[in-house]
Image 1 (tube, rainbow, N blue to C red):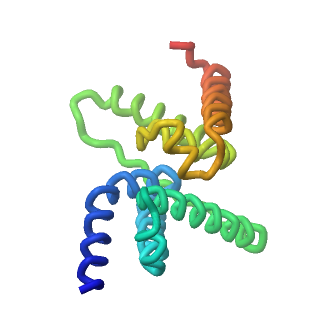
Image 2 (cartoon, one colour; image 1 turned 90 degrees about the vertical axis):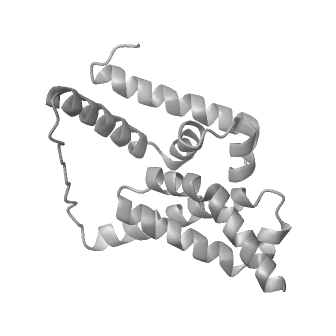
Length: 176
């Protein structure tokens, strides 16, 4: 009977927070494949320790914290591998056949630039920005998830925004 209730808890947790967790993984990772892998790793890791889920008042925070830690770990592993054998990434740019191709190209260019700028930020600025803007978490939720003070979250959000704004201004975008 306990296993059934645990299955129900797992199901409800994934049903309630799976989409946001996947969006977060997608923002952290550089591709859908990496996001899929990260999402799967998070689910497997969290479900290895059911007692942690049952202990938590907000088990969704455990999901996001685990995703953050697993991503950082994979980045460290990737950096070590790159020092030994560099890999050249292959980009797939597909433009849809649409009536207004110019708008699509401009949107894709802006989206690519913003992703590049955000992905280029140090992790301490990047992760709070993703939580705040993509998952629409408030400052206190981010602080609890990352286990840092509210003031630190606000500072990192501000400094991250300032860095992105500075880069956009240098690239020729106005303040609008």
